[in-house]
Image 1 (tube, rainbow, N blue to C red):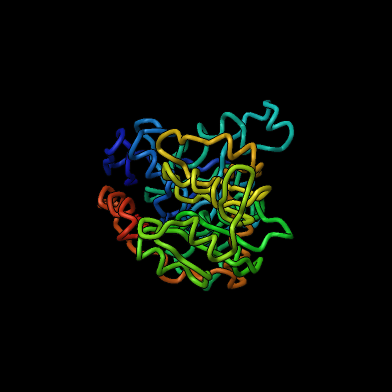
Image 2 (cartoon, rainbow, N blue to C red; image 1 turned 90 degrees about the vertical axis):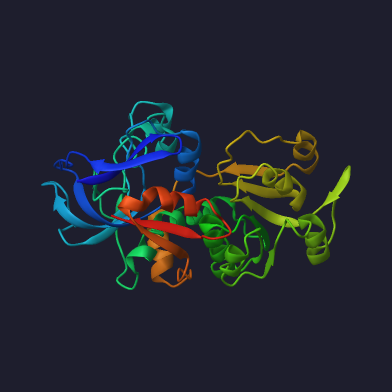
Length: 346
């Protein structure tokens, strides 16, 4: 089968690789669409997370072509999304059910240690319906179905940072995760939402949010103070956001988070900065925000939200490329002014 093979930072080649074997508990999918994730971009830029020879790609939708003898409820021809990883079963995280923190995760997860979706076929190990594999709603196009993994990231993020008393949220970064997170906060929890995003294209795609701002043209903190009032604290003045979620991972965005959030608010961190970010611990001590890192995706919730019409996925896929053109696809995905979500269609 054809696959895009990672050859080190800034290098990928398309070549033939051996076909995938289907174990008794596995399924094989013919990949119909696979999105380029921010973590894929990070790997392409820096070489982090993956080794040379890896087939990346974990935001995929595919048609089942083969099922193992022990797989239940999944048949050839089904259109599904999903993921898998093989955990060690012995560390304290596996013993407590927090499998996402197993040290083996990135050695065995699809797109990181196991072959991923930038390929004609992909294998999901230990395929369990409604746990690691989910049927795709019929009303979704393939490109939209490839958004179930990032929508699952947004769903998991919101579930971890939402509090019943919160009503004001700031999203830093209007890419696909920021966009979908903003939509869920607005449509499911009725927040007043501000999206801060330099790209005009991405600001225009922020469906249904209350306010957008270009932080390169307008200072975010005075904007928030005019909107919601002045958030005074012991030795300064910032914003009054109950919740700030960093979906950008820029060097300045976490600094902005500490200024924009009110005292005792919550900062969610989803994005992956390429370099260490300086933290003003004076703000952390005197404002005492709860800082929550979010890793993983709740694809079951994503499929439910998509089925219920809680998110507008239309036109979020800005570009589609053949597998042979994957390097160009990565270049376009890195241009925030020109793209929202780029997908590869093997």
